Amino acid sequence: MKLTTQTIASYRPPEGKDHIVFDEELSGFGLRYRNGRRTWVFQYAFGGGAARVNARMTLGDYPALPATKARETAQDLYAKVRLGQHPAAEKKQTARSIVIHSGVSFPAILNLSETKSGPAPIS
Figure 1 (cartoon, helix red, strand yellow):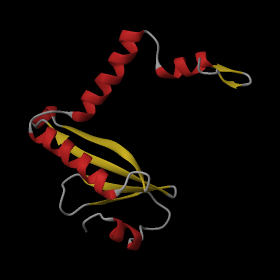
Figure 2: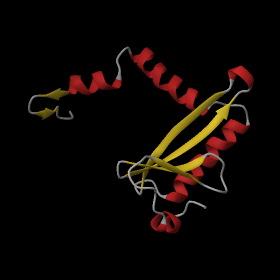
Figure 3: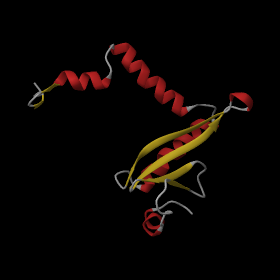
């Protein structure tokens, strides 16, 4: 089925287990049902032979991220994969480079700005 607001509203996933329903028009684009939450995903295979890697990226939660915006994001990722890029690895590398260049991880920054009475005021 094509994942739209209407089809998502009428779809009932299997009870009691994680489930991903994939879009019939856009390869790798799907909606994961887990613990009562619905999350957009994009799944793809990169490389070939022994170097083949399967990757899955989380795009965002539904309905906070609407179906049309999630589809656009997945289309962009699909195009990158077709051009020989590995978006999941690029995302991880970007996160690592932020930590390396700053010397401090994002969770550490959060801990520095919090006090016992709550977040530090913005000055």
